[in-house]
Length: 183
Image (cartoon, rainbow, N blue to C red):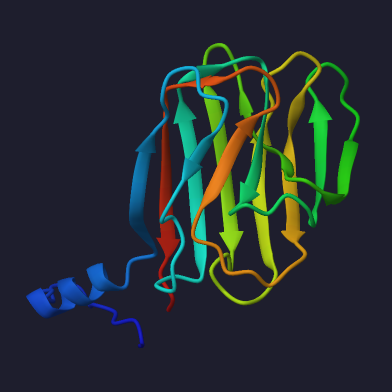
């Protein structure tokens, strides 16, 4: 559908407003509150045939100083990713890669003051390889900030994902899932 443009002084009709709202970019899917001292959290009914691509945001709560690992469904192999970051203590580019791993490592970070994750996931409910891209803000000593990207080497259609801390447990915070509306 073509995007309608307005001129100065023109009035937007109810139909125009409804069209703009119906074609907005991100659509709220669900939000899940993380429990107390959990070893992992599974978000069910996160992905469906309604959307091809998704944004996942986790903010709040606490954990040990570490990282968040992410798996799709019950799949524990076939994860590939690269993580390029600059350590806070030494301004030099560092890279980490995973070849046929058990999860996407560094999907987010955990800290005694706040947990964070910001990922875009592409095609998790399609019969094709799922890929992801995210921004990482490390929270443990010696960590840094950077970008992560990767794919899952299978064509399984997923509806759920699990976040697992690299150390300790998670308490609180909210995980929100949005669908990217197709144009």
